[in-house]
Image (cartoon, rainbow, N blue to C red):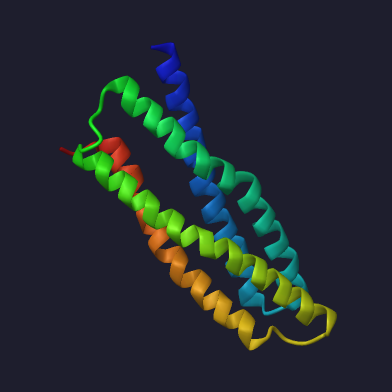
Length: 155
């Protein structure tokens, strides 16, 4: 029982870090982009990319591992509706996150180049930003739905 509670605690902490880092990164990057100041955008995107690699990547790996372990220990069937939906939504969220990381690195580089050249943010930056935003919305709602499924476990 103690092993299960420890893994459940890790699962909850990892989900909190995963979601919290995503929300925090989105907030800071969005506020930086609204400023339209290449130096500020470059600085913030550098930190957002670091946060994604340190927190999001590690917790994104921890979630399915701890989740699978708990399912096995609690003898929950993989075909339970809440489990199936949680897994599907997690795949959607991760499918959105992977290109978002690449977009953030690209935005970081474009903003840094604009800053060094004393130029405004280029059109390529704004294209990346639109894709970043468009991918962030379904990921956000997928994670919110997963939280609900984890708590409610509807049948």
